[in-house]
Length: 370
Image (cartoon, rainbow, N blue to C red; front, side, top):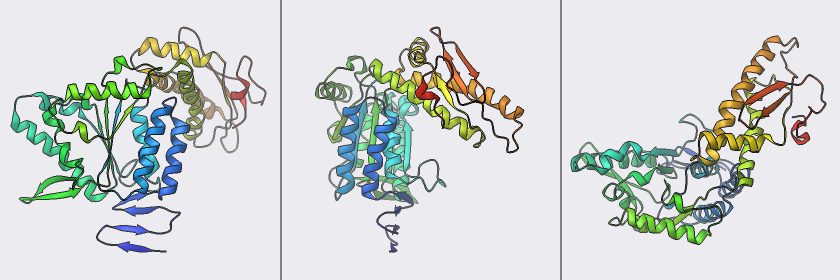
């Protein structure tokens, strides 16, 4: 089946395949919901309550006849999954088949840090100019892709006067973004968009064992205190707390980060590496301890950064040497590697031969063939 509506630029090829709403390739509803649940389960460590709240709200939005945009407020400490979840929502909604307009067509991610000075200053003309600038960017994006994900990060840096630019965009009645073109104001509907506002409000009072309702109350109260004279706070329907991870959840992050290195080695070698990757049972815990010492305020992000910088770079260097020495006709390398990380955070990567035996002192679950 092929049906096109020129006015909305919609193209439906089949209920089971990609369809277009504007220029961006959307997944069909059932696929989008399934993909979201899959991504949240596979790539997010901890935050099960937050993931359930996001999944429920987005699923309802996907199947509903939308009259207003879906608005989330993700709040919590640095490095606990807020930005990751935002990207997972985009990856669930949009097909990966088109990369002509960037990594994900339909995703706009703005850090509000660059607007902080103009937001807090007394120059009203600069404030108005900044508000019009970002509203125009959002309007132009939605003009091309009405179903876009609009992520506004670090909103705790904005004043009430600046945040109020969202009032019209999130309005329950005829929500729209405006911009000026050739002396005329153009209005672009926002009703099909998903807005994700990210902050670290009350991060110091959130703990792994706090109840979900209590965390929501803390964040909403802080938002009211922070933007007491803004009407925008009341328009954000979904406050989603992201709490610090437990020790077990941090170990999951370390294990997942190490596991992804296998795929990165394969990609880096363009499929030439045919070995295995393993590490001892104490390695994840030692990575966590080292990451906390180096970046005490970054939670899971510190762990992933440690693996990407300290471990991955050594693996790439050793793999480069192995590829250069390969005598295989196709250039393949069958050498496997074992990762060591001691209590001081010192990283050492060793090759352990061409055979398929398990390396000494390694977790046998991580010594299986790829």
